[in-house]
Length: 88
Image (cartoon, rainbow, N blue to C red):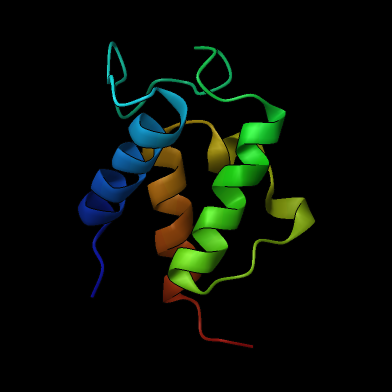
């Protein structure tokens, strides 16, 4: 079973590797991606594609909100919620 902590570790690693060129800098798990200039709107789409491919979940357009995708913690919580729902 995947925990929120392990999801956060995986998301943090992806963000550092993909958007921060391997340098974590001031990135905290609650740092706003958009507010911190870490990820732009195109980057969010890349993040969503990574999540869909990695966790075999479908992100619906109405789910693409800052509440779900604007920090490591928010992304980890979103994935955890999606993984805990029965497949429909």
